[in-house]
Image 1 (cartoon, rainbow, N blue to C red):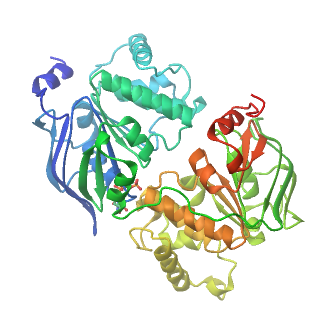
Image 2: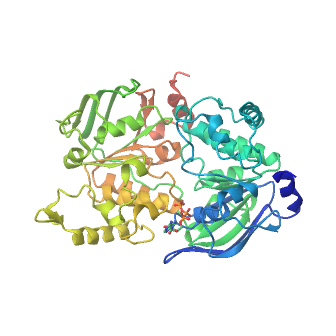
Image 3: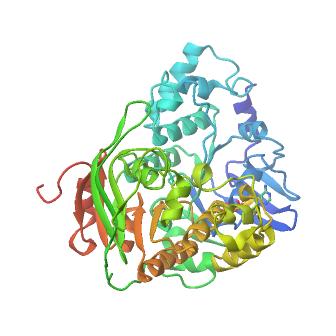
Length: 521
Ligand SMILES: Nc1ncnc2c1ncn2[C@@H]1O[C@H](COP(=O)(O)OP(=O)(O)OP(=O)(O)O)[C@@H](O)[C@H]1O
């Protein structure tokens, strides 16, 4: 008998797809999940929301066999199921798409899909058969990708499709997605939701972890709220509102809009002229960018990811070399060789919150206080002779952790053990509290919960009101529209146009982002 038939015999069709009973899990002193019970009904899309660190990823990792619960039971299709590892999860029909994909970059799509599936339901099909199965699945669910393409050549959106195909190929009935739209463009996110609705039509069950309440309202049937490791509410989506969900999540009313007065722009702080960058593969990432940011203003850069915004931040932050003219307070900044590195930029008065906090913002194996202390080496108050004064750095980090509400407020915890949003707060605390003349911020609220978004937006506005210049890059149009004093749209390595938020709308910006002049259209 095949595994699938075996599975179906055990399933009670009337039972929930998943039922958790009294799940608890602690990491040392941190109670990540505490006595959690929930039911996910078959054939529904079930959202899970909660602040950063509420315990969502831990709970799903237990369900997928990555962690073992200290207590509690898991029922799949009505029958009690032990899930000691991910193979067991797959046998139980559970698939998971992680925030950080688990694909082998230099393997093809087909190889990635087949890899590890041999002992599962498919029992070593020939590669030709596997290709056919994959192509059929891709067609059925609008997940088009070329089976022979290497993963490293695919966009993030397409890599995610491969992850979904991998789960479907292993015959998953239940698909868990952990913040799947964090790295997607708006069009890719729309496509993903279409796929999720199709999967639901086919009777599959989807569990969706997200911070975006718009997505919850748009695509889910039911939503469960986690708070401090507990499951505090489960409601039908049609009976609730974003405001109510925000309050349930955070435990207080949350401003879903940015409150800010008009900007009082001063002198030009940053001037960029004719900036060009060709990367090591010969791709022209910047093709003559011109822009200015003044003291006391936020210039928002809108654009579909991959149109040069990241390259711009990297050049200004001293990570990539380029050609052109850049000056800070009228003083030229070197764009290559000596003085074009991150430390020199920092000394010149530039703070940088990079888009990729894992790769560029933090050293994950280092403690919170060490990460907060990076870049302060030049400051005399932290020096003790030739050495760093670690006690002073630790103490300083404690203050920043408290002011930025980093949870848990433990400076000794390694950066990798903080949830995504709290890692972001560590980077922001380090970069913002030194009051840089120019702050470069890339995707400041990616993966961050709404309480923290409110907090981060308020801090950015405060920095502006203190007369600092801010260059904000975000793929979230909402964020660009509500936070920026001026908006520049980038397309294909160039600035397509500049607009005032009061004189534009998402449609016009969307056209500029696609390389068309919205006004002319
Ligand atoms: N391996 C680990 N070791 C120590 N602590 C951990 C570990 N994994 C998670 N934690 C802690 O458990 C708590 C719950 O974390 P979890 O990642 O489940 O939260 P989350 O709700 O998914 O957050 P986010 O929305 O930021 O992704 C946090 O306080 C986190 O710091």
